[in-house]
Length: 90
Image 1 (spheres, rainbow, N blue to C red):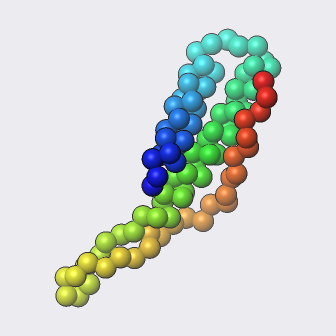
Image 2 (cartoon, rainbow, N blue to C red; image 1 turned 90 degrees about the vertical axis):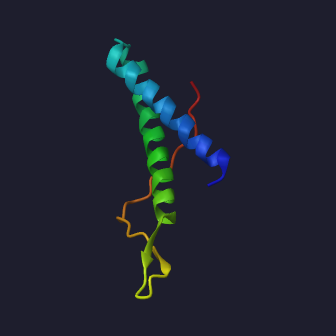
């Protein structure tokens, strides 16, 4: 996986963690809480989509009858794709 894509996931995941901490620990105005919640949902969907992409690339290495490794696609669950929205203006 290219480093920039990995960094996108890590950055989105860290931001999602910060949003969750803020929502859990602070008493925020309703409008701000709603904005954070919506942004958290978008980040969650983005992270989930990236994880699904990685899961699709995983291959299990199995030995054939002669003990030689062979690859086989990883069996995946069918989940609907969730596109991430671009950042909303604040």
